[in-house]
Length: 73
Image (cartoon, rainbow, N blue to C red; front, side, top):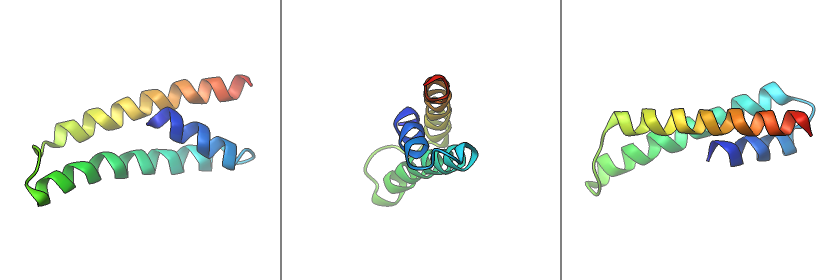
């Protein structure tokens, strides 16, 4: 998720890499925590904050890898 969002935001904002990274990171956090809130409010699934934290960390690692790929090309 992080890699796709980082590459898409870098493609949409090629001259503003810091803004692209910030936007991608905010979307990663929103999706990760929003999914946990959805399972909490609907009662379907299991709500755990550490799942959201792990998802954000995974998204951040994907963003780092995609950022390195984009910066070399």
